[in-house]
Length: 64
Image 1: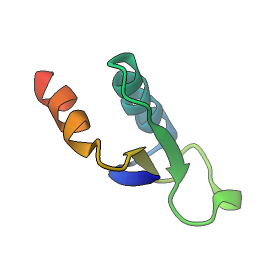
Image 2: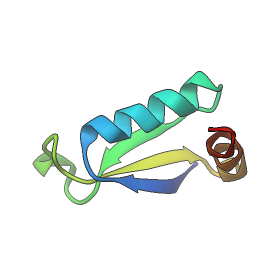
Image 3: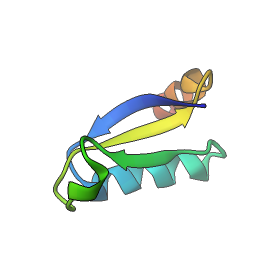
């Protein structure tokens, strides 16, 4: 199961967050907000992390 962790303003920022979390060993996924068939690079995206591991993502961000 995956939990919503953060919303981003576009695909580029979503991919940057995803890369940062995965670089620290935490799996992450990105999905467009709204209809998945209507997304563009400038759509909002949500960052997902494994359910129950949100605190790990918080710790990774705290280290920055």
